[in-house]
Structures are given as structure tokens and as C-alpha cells.
Image (cartoon, rainbow, N blue to C red):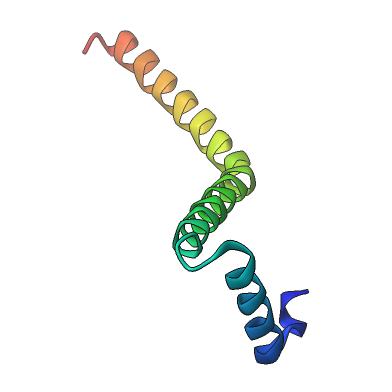
Amino acid sequence: MLQNIGIPGLILVLVIALIIFGPSKLPEIGKAFGSTLKEFKKATNELVNGEDDQKEKSEEKTHLQAVEHTKTKTGS
């Protein structure tokens, strides 16, 4: 969607934002938009990679239980 805007469209959007919000509000809006985008990417990555992390954690737990079981058998 954003790929079709181009340079003239981007300039038009920035001019309209400047007219609506004024020069003092634009940095605040940009910062808020950037932090929102950062949080969204982080949440998306957690959702995508969360399943892999849960599998790894369950495998680690199984491995630790096996090691503890071996220690109790050998008396270490």
C-alpha cells in the first residue's frame, strides 16, 4: 500500500500534516508514531517466535528433569 505513494504523494501528506497539526506538534506525532510502530513490530515478533521459544523451553525443562533424575540415581 505505501509502496504506491511515491515522492509527490509523500510530500503532499507531509504538507497536509503540517497545515493541520502545525510545526510544533509534528515531532511529537512522529515520535509517538515511531514508538507505536516499534511496539507493534516487537509484539509481532513475539507472536511469530513465541511458539518456537515455548518449544525450546519445554525441551530445556525435559532435559533438566532428565539430568536431575540421573543425579538422583548416581547419588551425585
